[in-house]
Amino acid sequence: MNKIGVHIRLKHWVKNLLVFIPAVFGLTIHDQWFVLCIAALSFSLMASAVYIFNDIADCQWDSNNPTKEDVIHAHLIKPYLLVGSLLALISLTISFALLPLLATATIFVYLLINLVYSLGAKNIPYFEMCFVILGFLLRILLGSIVSSTPISNWLWIEVTLISGCIIVFKRLKEIRLFHQGIHVRKVVSTYQEKHFRNLFTTLMLGVIIVYTLYCWFYSIVELPFHLPFMTLIPVLYGAFYLSKYIYGNVIPDKNPVYLFLSDPILIGCALVWISMWIYLLYAY
Image 1 (spheres, rainbow, N blue to C red):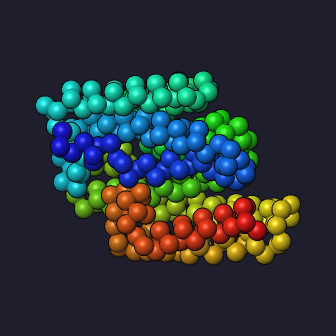
Image 2: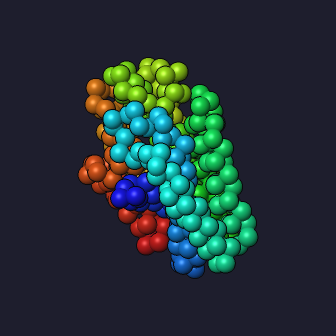
């Protein structure tokens, strides 16, 4: 149990900042920041529970993978199962007490789809990736519910494409480990590296095209033409920077989240992009 911090994936909580996105772009963050923090905390606790359940389901495979730090050995399954169940219960209790009922239902649906994923759906090629994408979409749905802010079609599409890039990026790393003879999940053996490189390129192009169209649309209805397009600079630079991992021989870190949080270039791109939009939305 000394690796409980690894299993609850505290670094992955950064993904739950998506909960705030609808309110930020809907200009309702001032009034709803507290309830959004509660929602993000509740979702983070549930996500940690899900990570533990998934690690328990993967314990047999992970024990043969020397790159895995988060292996739950057989004699520790019951204690970790108890911790995961407790985290899930706390998450649902907080959301039920402090958030709208629909928000609690959203978090519960996230738990259900991940249980389905852990218990077998993860072994179905490509279909398993849809579960990960759905998890990202539930985050922005939760943010929309608790802040009473509608989600634009632009945001639905962009989050779908970005989450697709994240899961394809992660699978590409696992494919390369498989080719090195390292034991990975069974479904990875059915994937081809060239295909996933092309798939990542297609999704990233989709991200850039949709984002460019959004900037064009936003410049028509809200801001002077050139200002939203300035935010393309960090987006494009970050995309070009990632190409060294996709088309080079550099193997990405264990998870895209860890790579992002440890790479100063990617962190810088994200901070510049966030700062630019905060200025455009709230200060310009």
